[in-house]
Length: 410
Image (tube, rainbow, N blue to C red; front, top):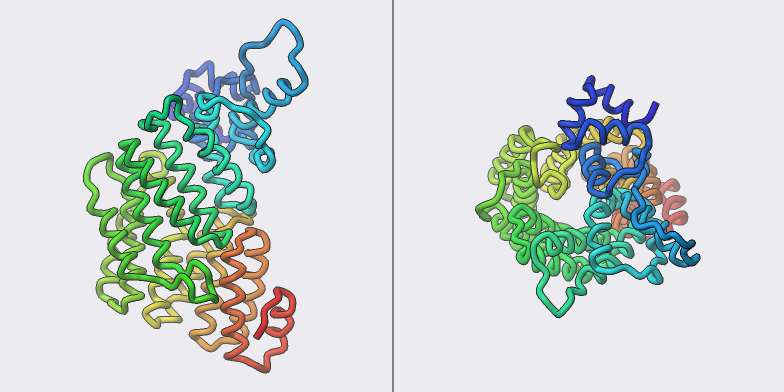
């Protein structure tokens, strides 16, 4: 039995009902379940509905325009690569794909499907490949014939590609690149006319000013006043369809900014509003859900950061435990970059509580998480917290051993 059929039966849906949910014909769904070749736009719709890549779903892309004579070997390799890419898989190929020649139209067709795969990959361990892939796609898509300005769907896709580059840049410890990519994303979002995308970008820019973008150096310290202005700008944008998930993201950002400014009442009010907005958000009906980057465990994780900033460490620990439980329920086998965000917060809470055992336990989980995720940012954050732990407990042998393992100088 194919995975598609299993997924349909898990939803207790017949062919006609499930095809209607996805937005394709009954015969097309039947063909997909039997592993027959599908058009690119059909593959994209199925992948978007299930939130999986074509490779994960076992979808096969049609190959058009077959020649009567055998093509040359390099053309065969090119076709094979295009088929993989257009199906939303084969990201690893792109690390060295400079020799693959694409027209802008081919790149746009691939990008429509690939953007979804890139979003999922940006959550995973191969951050470097995501960065290289998105840079490669952007370079092709920006080559508009005749020097015309990009607009509409092309501009929207380019904006998302730059946004993904910005996400990867944070984990690669490239703060200047992150800010430049966000600036480019905002430029193309404006050209696209996509109001939902325009609302999402102040959220990402705001968090650039909430985080210490290079932990342990003091180079990019948090600027909560600037961050707060970004989140307020996003909430003030009018027009376009409603997106409770995006609203929740912007409100959680405001809550964290207020907590860093030591304004507890405003922080709590914003957090309560964020939780109310997230409660009515739907991954299927909210146009900004994917852009909002707000999976179920993210709201209690934000609550933990707010409480920690306000000096309520025990309450923060409870929120972190809730966040981790929700994370493990959603991704029981996950090895993604979110692990590089989640576990170090437990180290910070342990420091605030003066709990050495909890600190060591959280340190071990943090090191494993950042090793899996490939996040240089997460690694730098763990090193910074470990140095603070060594200052707090200078006689702890376990901390000395971990410091030697991950090359931390006291």
